[in-house]
Image (cartoon, rainbow, N blue to C red; front, side, top):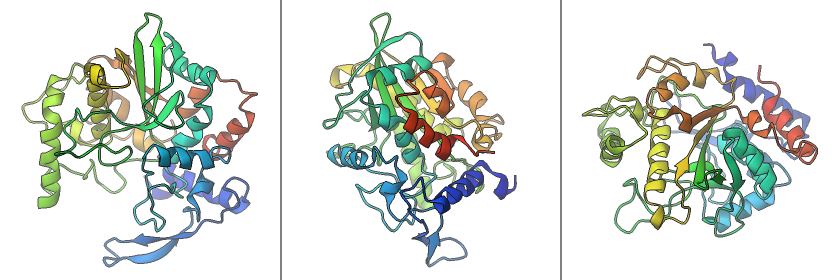
Length: 356
């Protein structure tokens, strides 16, 4: 597929028009310098990037921008940044307009204190949910949706010694989470993995490293460490169905399935170890939020399976009802449109229109 016709490139061009118009990004003109290092520039070179905003806060829906920064700082959460972003900082939002973390925050953060709005979203995911609960793992500014959620304890072998888990970096986390109650009185967690323009094949790479196969000693070491961390958990999983003596070439170690595998294990362990966790639940639904127009992610035939994203991942699951692939706009189907008219206008202009 030609680069100019990819979903990512179309969204980039859409954002460049919005930057030029000056009415979405707080008049931020973009074009901040970033450090480019590749085969053509092995020593690196500074270049302006048109869709990288000067101030990361301008990337957020204006009514939430200040509080999002405060929420991340108070709860010790790291923002995700584009590699080479010169404004990298713990409490500085990414200025990259295609950031999926920023997209997730812009969609969900404005609703997180509104119990009825969050319940409407939860019921779009599972009609058996009758209530949503405050997520008390947020020590500051708790609401009905939390972001970059991790477990209280390391159940996935991701830390060493006395090292602690840090939200948003170097451990398995979920982009957002809702905590609810079902009609049968059981508690349920809804971990949400939020994708925007990502795909994992434009650069001919296929997994996190992007290969667990031999790609030099350092990357082979990372591959071995991942096998050590997760393989036994996969074998013992009640939700992951693909069982192999060696997982090295399995779909679980190739993106985007590597993330989904870890989050599935994370969710299972949250339920299994609820006695030691603040959030205590007996059930879950794993939500994967992807724009339907991102065909490079959805419809690509992944080498590890020969199938598209949905068919590949469902073939890995014992209970497919516990995984839902959802269009972002669909989550808003039942919320109060009049109350959130400004937000919906913002999301429509920025994310939902102009995909084609």
